[in-house]
Amino acid sequence: MCMFYEALLLAAVLFIAGFLFIYATNYPQHPALRPVLQIFLLLIVASYFVWFWCKGGQTLAMKTWRLRIETEAGQLLSVPQALQRFARALLGFLFGGITIWWALFDYEKQFLHDRLAGSRVVLVKNKK
Image (tube, rainbow, N blue to C red; front, side, top):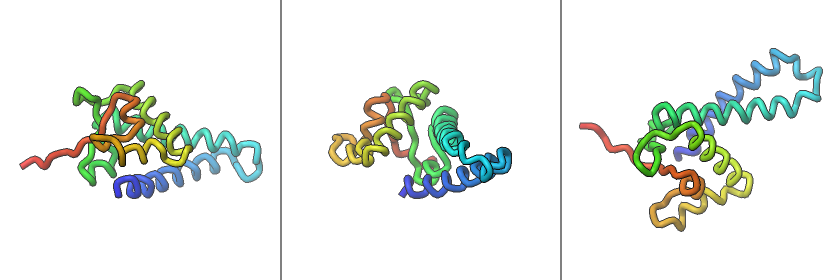
């Protein structure tokens, strides 16, 4: 459910970023800018995740579902770790979500891209 919610939030972010790009470049009259738009949107997505993972360990969707990304030592991810996690998750997504399906067989239910990046998803306990 967290991934579905994340997709909805990202759709809104990408809509706004795409609109701004099209407005700034007059894109409909320059079809050669399509690859530039695609790279721009990919950089927006990467920036979104890396920023949140490094600054607090949670995106808005992860806060809602009480999930957090951290290193195996329980610390926030560094920028290189977050970029590595993002790149591996993206690659896994492009190959049918293999890094996500991995969690079905992992003994701690962790994603493959987390195992490879030295990170993990943890449940945040309620503060009472």
